[in-house]
Image (spheres, one colour):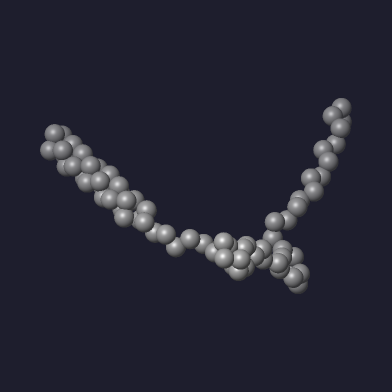
Amino acid sequence: MNSRRPRRRRRERASTLPRPGSSPPPTVATVDSSGTPQEHHVSTNYGYVRRDLGAVCVVGVVTLVFVLVAAFIA
């Protein structure tokens, strides 16, 4: 039995990946305060790593203490 609903249209997929053989998009150069253009770069500030490592250690110690206490209670 046929449905009264209209057919679903096929969705057009826009690819986020470049097509093979196409040239890559040009990179955007920024100008810093001295007026010389620089390529955009990723920051190498890793100051947050020590804080995160400390948090992981604290959570690990608390978990270990909880397991050991639970083992002695049971």
